[in-house]
Image (cartoon, rainbow over all chains, first blue to last red; front, side, top):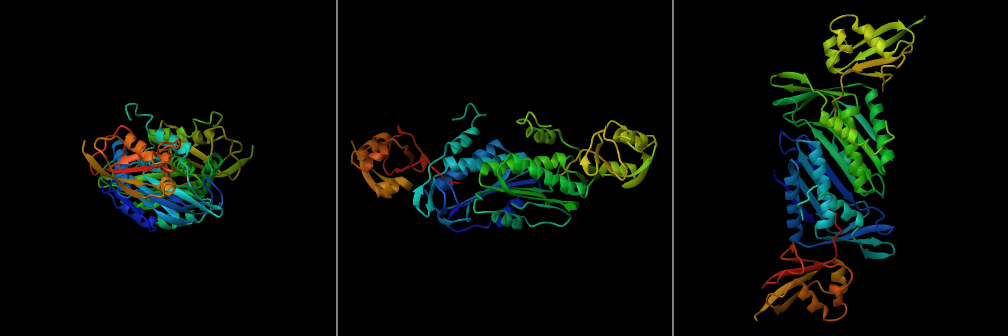
Length: 158
Length: 158
Length: 86
Length: 86
């Protein structure tokens, strides 16, 4: 039942995260994970890296809160969220979300919910570094829509 | 763009699979994975292991076909599916599905589609081994419904 | 009418209940899958399971096949319960 | 009316445009977040960005906060653009 939230500049070992999720319980039948990588285009093309800023303290609180939200909605056992900050180069890992559950539907839903929520609710800001300069990434309508999706079935929700 | 399909009795290293998915392309921004484990209950409780049977040859063809279906529907780069057969004990890995894409929505959807399809379309059969004996697992209505879900948006689909 | 020879595989619960994993069967050409099931069921218990209440799926040459599929010489037929992998 | 002292943090694009990462500000007690933004904007360029067209989000004591939130002594306020992590 232990969750794990880490915001750090150091790279992480996704394999170790998977291993931790496997050891949750004898009732664990499903592990869904997501890994985000620095790709060569975003708002601009020729991206060579990212700079990620965050709000220390608040970030961790928000993520723990999001895991709590996931736990209320789905039958999940353990959740692990790692988000890197600082300067990252092409192909590097940015974020890892892993969820264990008895059931695959819950593991998938909670993992995708957490990823969508990280994009719209956690205080991280991304700057793209390209050959032609650097610029802050704008929040996407598509991300807002994906984030809002999770609230549609809760009419009483804020 | 290379896909990987393996049906084998030997255990697999999910970390190595993740690593392979990371190396797909500079345009890879998202990797979604699913790992299925032997849990301590299923149709019955006190499950101590599983015996998995398959139809050699047909299984691999079907899985390659399912990856092809996923590729037609979503913008995915690489897909890796590993499914074990034979006798597995509590906590052991049964199945791994990993998908890389530029976009997280496509990676998640294709990964979940492949898992649902493996449950309803690939010739595997599971027998639960419990303290009180063994019995073949029955196909679940919930699995059929989850599998059928993917066809609802394609009215022309068979 | 020429006879043809096919192989028939049985999997999982069906394999256990029939006590048979694989056999070679000689049948008239162009028999359908449904007719093959009927012929096998006529062997008596436990073979009537092939046409019983519990669903039995079939593949011909490793692709899912329907009852109306006509069988050809050297076809590989398989009968099995609904799948439960993943 | 007593004055209170708060810290204000700026992040990302806003931090760069304002040239300020963090400052300590003394304000009248019970000023709202909206009133604080207004006061800071009155410093002139580039501070009017806080009340400009581009959305500026705010947190008080590390929780998202609305314009009507009243500020207390030692509050930690933060202003930032919409988030773009993950």
